[in-house]
Length: 247
View (cartoon, rainbow, N blue to C red):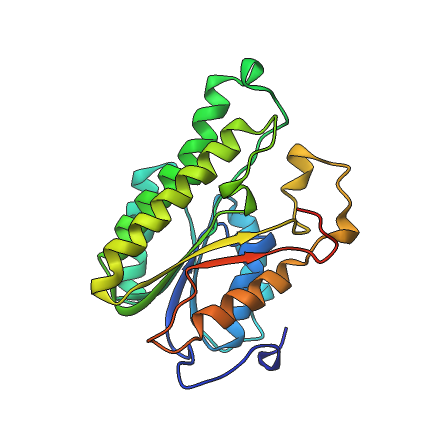
């Protein structure tokens, strides 16, 4: 992916620092590549150290600083370790991409185990809250937070109660956060992508028609376009759907 794929303007991202959670694959990795193409330094996180190393190698095309730090967003101590490392290497954070998330098998509420419910909520909602809270301590005016919520943040589908509850909660959190951060000059974008060809479909719909879906790179390009708007403008909700009509 070359830098020519993305726009440049007076608010370019050269030498800014972005944290991307869940950065080892799918939309997270695509956004990391898009930001790297803009010259943005990166903090990549995920649970799998080997996957983090592979992601770092994929970003070798960009002459940027990369901190690849394992982190489990369900674990406050792991998040503390992450931000200690960020402070050592970069001192500040300009962009936060809250992308870490998990789904679950299609199960109706009466069959959904409590531990599975808790794992999804802790990853998709509580983890977003704790990471954001830590990031705000080192984010200055002009920063941007992008929360990847999925189109299900304002829709429902039977069999996905924990996932949908986590995303509905995350949308409420995101909208509240935006209102709180306006006086600080920090933009907050709710990213609501429709069906995107990522591994998450293996969890709840293995037979999904992948050819009708968007690519992660398409979503990433839209995110970078939104981030690159002038400081006096913002995209509050970025909803992207496949033209085929598939959610």
